Amino acid sequence: MAVPERIRWAVQVLDPAPGDQLLEIGCGPGVAVAAICQRLRDGRVVAIDRSATAIARATRRNADCIASGRAVLRTVALEDLAADGLPEAGPGFDKVFAMNVNLFWVRDPARELALIRALLRPGGTLSLFYGYGTPGQGPAMVPGALLGHLAAAGFTAEVLTGPSVAGVVARDPGPSRGGHQGRG
Image 1 (cartoon, rainbow, N blue to C red):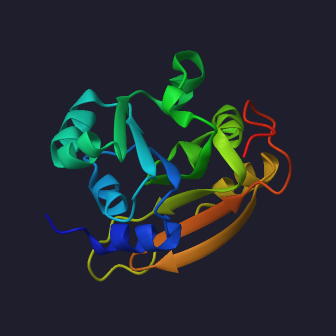
Image 2: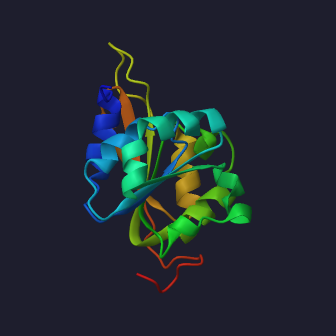
Image 3: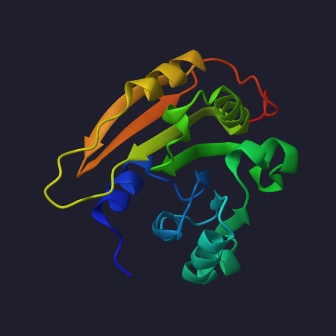
């Protein structure tokens, strides 16, 4: 299956190294998982989605990546991770990302952003991408509320635009407030 241009652009922005540990929030049918796995050697992408149907589709699409250990898929919502835990996080993730996950701007995501900070390794990034790649549509816009929520959670953010998609790459300039402090 062809990878949509917006997802190819997002993976290019993420630029996963062969050994990176990544977390995708809201993986849907797993198209980005497949594109990222092609770049991994001893790294891994953990993909979560609240929809069991989406995880079933992503599992079928990424069976080889799962078998090789480069991908792990879980049916869980981000806001439920604290209760359920995520053993695959190990010492943390180099990159956490999401495509068209609106919870970061439709309400105050302070709890989720704190969890992401705890899951990120020092120097890690949170990348959020918005846009559906509609032909003839200009780049998507980043909601101002998103940038405000990231700043309130202690992230610095850079806005990027691609083909009918906008991205925000956020970094945590300070020490992690979470469980992976001091690991690296």
